[in-house]
Image (cartoon, rainbow, N blue to C red; front, side, top):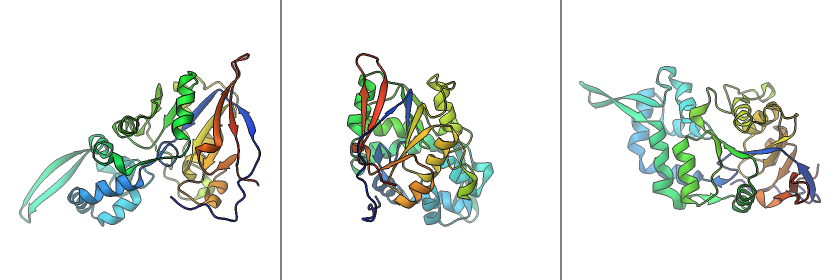
Length: 277
């Protein structure tokens, strides 16, 4: 995780924010699985080399480009024909011997938590926040670029609350970053719009739904979906989180608490120690 620069002032007083639903990114927001992913690919270097060679790129470049993207979108960067959930790659035993092998991306990602669960860390405050939302039957969902086996695997291994609704890589045509490189052009909000629909919240007024995100592309996607966004400075610099348009910026989820009014049943989030701007 990137350290929080000392120049930033995270001392704002508590602020109560009403909401009708809350949508969470996964990696960098609920957990940090960076070490586990790196260990997996380094251990399965033969698989990485095989995919890289077939796509005609350096395997290390492939690993770098895969960070924060759906695996299928990483494949699309290099070879659109192979951008499907079962990627057919060529295996070359010798120069004269070629055969094809099918790589099941969902299955491959699902192995990571099982084999390297000890390499992931909870984002501080995540366990308590998710448990309180689920315990109160509040409407929440996970919206992620990871596949369903990967997300369920992490939630199982780390014994975290499972949402009743989940939007994963298989559910959308376009991942959060879309094909956008220029930050001024925004990001694809499809995933968050779909999550609102699955929670029956599509008709809610703009800003009634909260998104919790760490990645600039995800923050922009949340904003473009008409949500208010809590940005976490866990994986990217504070500058980038602010520039992406987060309405609040916090160090981690220890600054975010769920509250439910027993008399009115209104749902609120209390945000404390946010960035003073």
